[in-house]
Length: 103
Length: 103
Image: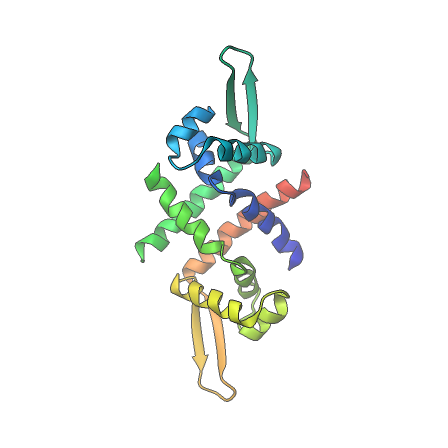
């Protein structure tokens, strides 16, 4: 059982950080820049946002591109692994609809 | 965005309670009785376990059957909705394997 649970727990831990799912969703919808994420996710502050973004880059969900411009520009994109996660999250979302419908 | 996130957040909240995923897995593997879950999940205590089981019954993931025997016997089973969740968790588990492989 441990062998089967371990990857699943890793997966759940990886996505359960505060705002990670909303961030993934924003990027999935075409947003790229931290300022766009801040506008799209009302309650998050800038420091927490960059912490979460750094973790997601470290986990291989996102890539970060820095453009050497003035003012400096930073963009995030989903990796293949991040896109695979989006597919699974769609299924979880559909499942969540069933839960909400029955409350 | 709110409309899309809401079912997903509900789904993630529903499965992120402590020990819920291990409990689902145990039942998926054919275990039914609280005493079996206690043996299968080393660190959980009986009180926390029944709290989690009650929440999962309330959320429609499990059904509880009480047998009027002596000593009293209680068994839990996955509902259809619980089984749909297991399918999604398998996919998350596969995705988690990719994460672990790259650490």
